[in-house]
Every structure is written in C-alpha cells, then in structure tokens.
Length: 249
Image (cartoon, rainbow, N blue to C red):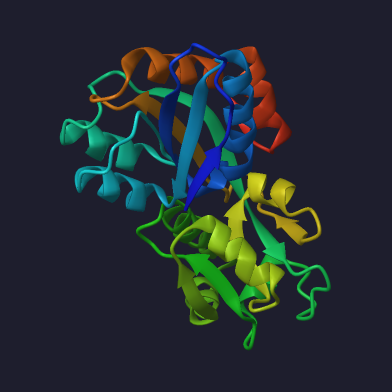
C-alpha cells in the first residue's frame, strides 16, 4: 500500500519526494510523523509504503526505490545490509513493541484467558511465520507452552484459520468478526480501540525492537533528516502516543 501525505511546495522552491518503506505496524504513527516532517520541511512530500517488513525488503532487493527503511525486526534490516541496500552501521533502533491478544468488540467466543486460545472451535488468526509478528507470535506460544504445559501450543496452532501477510490484516480479520482472536503488537490495540484485549505476561512475551536506516542510494540529506526526526523528542512522543515504547531519550 502506497500512502502519500501531500504538501504544497512554496512558490519558487523545488519540490522533493521522500519515500519511506515502513513496517505495517507503523502505519498510524508514521503517517502522523510524515505530516509533521512536511510541516518542518516545506516543499517535501513524504510517500509511505507500508507492508510486512519481509515484503518491503524483497521489494527493495527487486529494485524498488526508497530513501528510508524502517523494519519491525533486525533480521530484515540485516538482510538489507548484507545485500548493500543499507550501509553497514547506519541503522539505529528507535522504538520497541510488545505483543498482546485482540478479540472482537463483542467477543462472541467468550474468551477471557490465554489458555482458552487452545479451546476446540476457537478461530485464531496469526501473521505468517515469515512476517516479524508471525515469528514473534510463535515465540510467545512456545513460551506459553512452557507455562501451561500439556499440548497447549499444538491445540492453539490447530485453531489457526489463516496466516496473514502483515499485522494490519490480522487486526482487520478480528475487527470483521472473521476470527475470535489474533496476536498483534500492543500498538495495534491503540489503533483499534474498540477491540477487547488480553495481555501476555512479561515472562512469556516478546519485545520487538525496530531499526531504521537511510537506504544506500537515498537522498542522503532528506533521509538523514527524517531518521533524525523519528529519533527526536517530538518523533518519539508521536510513537508513544500510538502505543510504542520509545528507545530514544
């Protein structure tokens, strides 16, 4: 999905477009950050491509042009560095995110505990394992297996009715009532406040740490300015507003 945040360039100033490839979970926060960046940089239009981090990295490897890459995990950023898309040691971690379970607003399955995700007949939706949130979800279920015992993980995975391409699709399935539960980032609950949630205890949870970097072929000045804005106090406040845990002071 390509989202353009439009801005009119002042008379006499050459317009510029900054293209940012960002993890789907950053959609709301980065859209607001893009608007703030445009205000601070008259004449600049920020164009966002939001998708699963693995899909974004693949698009870049296949020749898609972008200035900034923000991933939901280190693995995709490291792969981009390995192929020369991102300069080594140019990435910076800028935010973290934990996981939780979301339920439809009316919770038709009557789920109140994590143990009930393993109940026969429950319809659970996850992201695919190649997506960062999908891998994190599998880690959480393995951690809960150690806590609950029995065949908890096996029964819970047997309830999975779909594996989505990114976390926003998991949210959409639950919102539409096509699933009884889904595992997403905590920030997704902020973006969809009508949904019910079940927290995952810290000892079983996973913390996702997000790196950001300019692309090697980027408009270096603008790309660096956007990364600096994300790391600034103003940028970190926007991320906190949308449910992320800032990493920058």
